[in-house]
Image 1 (tube, rainbow, N blue to C red):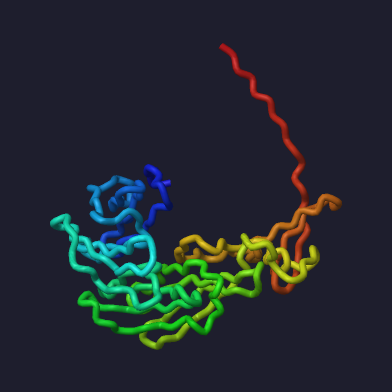
Image 2: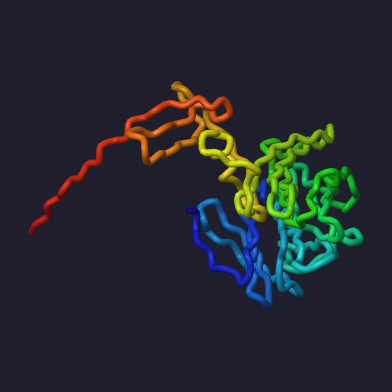
Length: 284
C-alpha cells in the first residue's frame, strides 16, 4: 500500500499522470468535489476544489499538470477543464454528443485526449481522440459489440503510451451472463485486439460446469462488471515448467492436483505437506 486516503461519499476516481508519474484522485463529499495528486511515495499535494461539481465520474491531468480534465457525474455533461496553475475553472473542453455520457478520460504521451463515450439509448460505446484544441483526430466505434447491459465501460493505458490504449467493455450473453471484453486499440492502424473472459459476479458463469474440465474451473473466476482496470508487464517465466496457476483441492484424494496446462487438461499430483506444530517458550 502506498498510502491511505479519506473515503468519499461515492467512489473516488483515480488516474495516473504519465508526465509526472503521480496519481490524481477526487474526493466527493456530497456537496463539493476536490482533486489532489499523490506523489509515488504517497505524499499528497494541494487540494483543488472543483467549483460547481458535486460528483465526478472521471479525471485526468495533462502531462505537465497544468490542466485537469474531468467529467461531472450525471447525464449529458461536458468534459470540463480546471487550471491547475491559477486554480480556476476554464471553458469546457468538449460537449457530450446527443444521448451520450462521457465515462472515462486518458491523456496520451503526445498530450492528445481520449474520451470514452457511451450511449444512453442502447449502451454502445465509442472512443474519440482529440488534440488539446478539441479537434477530433480519430474515432473508434465499439457499437458492433452487444453491450446493451449498460455496465459502464472503462479506459486504461497500454504499454505503448502514444499509439495504443485499452478499453473494458461488457458484452451481454443473456439476462444473467456477461462477458468481460478487453480491447486493445492500436491508433495508427485502427486495429482491435480482443481478450474475453466470463464475468465473475453474474448469476450464471457458463452454460455447463463440470468439475473434471479445467476450463470450467476457469469460468468460475473472473473480473467484475464495473471495476476500473490497469495493464502491467509480466516477468520472465521461471526455468522450470510454467504452471497454469489452477490448484484443485479434492477432499477425497490423498494428494493435491496442479494443472500444468489448463487448456490441454494436463495435470500433476503434488504431495500434501504434513502439518507441523511448534511450541515456543517465553519467560522472564
